[in-house]
Image (cartoon, rainbow, N blue to C red; front, side):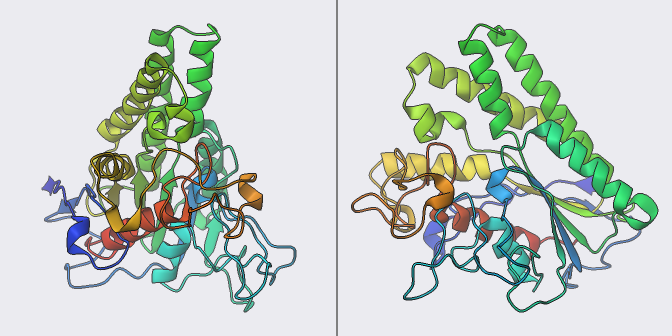
Length: 335
């Protein structure tokens, strides 16, 4: 028997910058083979594979042990210097990997054996994730993931932007754009289903919705009609993807980043300051995203009080929310 439990965490009950709210699908099988035998056994992944776009991307450093690899958010600096430190201001997948002591090749000053495969790409779209999953499966011994693999997947924002622009330029009608974004959502769900099974003998996949693009600084700069289109495209993508992910044993974790960001924005707009966030409207970076660090922020802005780094991408505060949400989910599910 499989069933789904939605788990909500209120930020007011947490003492540090963590999840405002999360909907997590807890997928269980009362008789399924494989996986953990009880909820008391902590999942201990031996490998992590990251799929998605730049929101999950850590770029390699100048050498195999350098710490100057950059991220598409507020890059951190080594204490007392102006040098980039990839360990500072970790993005959400770095935070999740760190929970299990798994090391990225892209940020490996100690020269440890890397246990995280970075398969996310800058500007990545659904088609890129499909190609990346194909390549991963072709390279995996036996052409399949294993139960000790933690696999993350967050993609869709760049597809939404592409189809929005297609409507604005009259290359597509709104109806055609919605149909296309739903088709792409179906492809994401299909990749998740390829990587798991109901016997729990394949991977463990944590998959995420994407925040409404209408709530980004890019979206807020548009007309009310354009904002409605961005919201429609985002919700159509998220809803379609969720509906087609196959409920199968204990192999899945659902991270509702869209709902988390909705609640942060609503709280700030209502006069709240969720864990110190005061601005959800404009970017905190004053320079291009890869050059953005803690010394290149707007007056009064910090890496923890603005939600957005640039017009589209999360600030470090956003990554903390997602990362803590992911850790909370990963460590509570009976994988």
